[in-house]
Image (cartoon, rainbow, N blue to C red):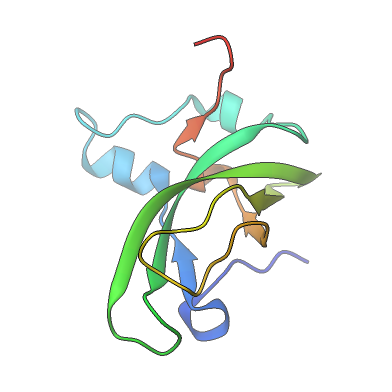
Amino acid sequence: MMILPTYDKDHYQLDNGEELNKEYPDSFWIPEKEARESLKVGNLVKLIFSMEETVGSDEVSVERMWVEITAEYPNYYEGKLDNDPDGSDCVLCGQLVTFQPCHVIDIYDENT
């Protein structure tokens, strides 16, 4: 069963790229839905993390970070965070992240 990260449980949550794209269509680009729904293990995708700066803090740090997909499931993915955030100690490089296609704001293309 898929459980997305929450502030209460994980001290961070993921921003919905589809909602941001709808709100700011001229300035917030995301990959096509078909591309976001057909990702494979090994793909690198960028997600927006909203994180407590420290556990229990009211201060929030928002960062775009790369995640390497490690598993595919119907309507969601699991991946490993590829870097440490600058503004939070609640999320660490290498930790597993559960997310959906709506959270993907970029897909790494080694050819560009």
